[in-house]
Image (cartoon, rainbow, N blue to C red; front, side, top):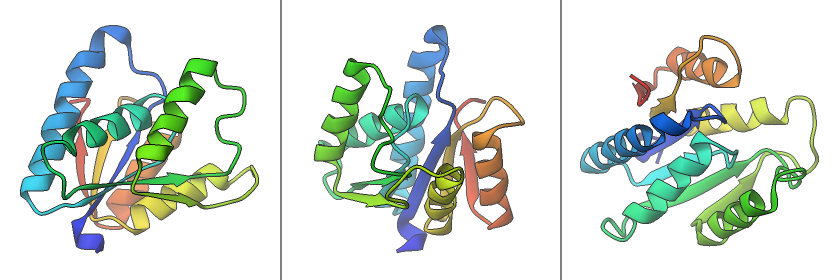
Length: 156
């Protein structure tokens, strides 16, 4: 299954003027992956790129019903403190997902890293939105590279 699974990682903030371009590149990367035989797409459920990626997978399911969205969430309280409209979209995505996995029940200092490692460890392709060389996204892309995953950065 790993050979047919791709994961997403990316920043929580996408500049407004870049959003449409990143949506288009993400869709193109997904379609290319589907054509290469990928069927399972995992995302971490965070705001920003994770949400954009999940929305794109769900939209493409209309054309490619064989694909599956897997949410790998760091803890049950991930959306605590989010704006009501972001929580509503998060819940909509959770209901529409084909599978939801929690890597921890409670929030801990390392639950986000645990989620990111789970996504990478179960994938052979990483579709990223990476514009900075530090932070959680850079860590996850570096980890994916060290594990031999194909990296596709939609930011470039």
